[in-house]
Length: 450
Picture: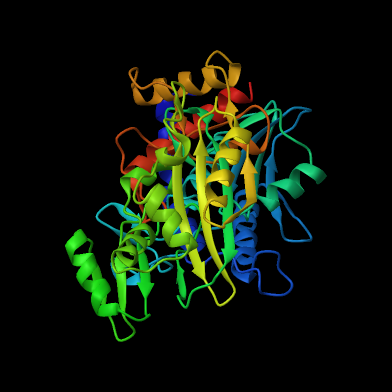
């Protein structure tokens, strides 16, 4: 390949274009909204997909938009074999707006960072890989294999976009998803999302949390005994705010794969309600078996393995309506654990409290041997660009698109020790680090297409 200095100069020449494209894409509030007729996941997500394909077309890629609006792709190069790069354009809700330094869908560049929902997960890394390939195109590189960027629109929910793509389209021989960390993720835990439901036989009404895969940072309460609840929360040392309707318990939002590093506001509200004598199926289940234990060891015991670590358990949403009580739970299962045993243990525990187990979604774990061609190639490129010979391939609790197809891994874009802010207020990327990621991606695509 041409000298790295030539690639660096070319990337620098298009860096401003990358920044503008990302600003334009992040400005689209592509949060799922299935209530809008004519779009599978909402008009905003469809707009983001069309904007991404517009950017690709402008850069010289051949593009395709699924007539149903589930996915799109952009391709360059020739040959029978194809390398895939999987990115997603949907984002999680913004959460509590007053915790953002700037509006989440009015992205800004400040102090070398770009702030906005989706900058890190996953619009920024996806565009970084796209512009990395554009730099290779500008240098006149001949691609001996086709390179296809596949844009999904339902990654934060049920992956229906990838289900449709895999049913209708050509599957790449191998590739990567720029939606995690460097140097490379060779194993991903199984992702199980379930709902525990039972008839609501109380007068309590609750609705808190936004997504299965996000630790909820707020949980509001507007029922009776609000004064007693405030006192109980104070004794427990839990933070909250009062409002005209009642109060809001405060937590710390993080991705469910790292649930133990967050503060689950729903769990704290349940503990406070129990302290003042409130009882229900979900309140009792949470207080007897879970509380703030992100590993749920009272249900599963010590469930972990050497390759991928501990089971993670996150209550992402709670609903108490006039008819039902419902907990929406996200579990990250170690790669060697038996999913059916985990499901059976949870169903049995829930049954003791009058809650029925209902599976919502499941993504099996993945494992790519470290001596696989793809793994060795990506590690070689990462080490050459960064000089980091210490960091090892890792296992993750994240659920990236890498598991949507065989022979894929998650590859960047966050570097070791770099702050990860996805699913949190003030999500952002460091632009200098993203430029380095672009360099890694360019070298990786070059090597994979030889």
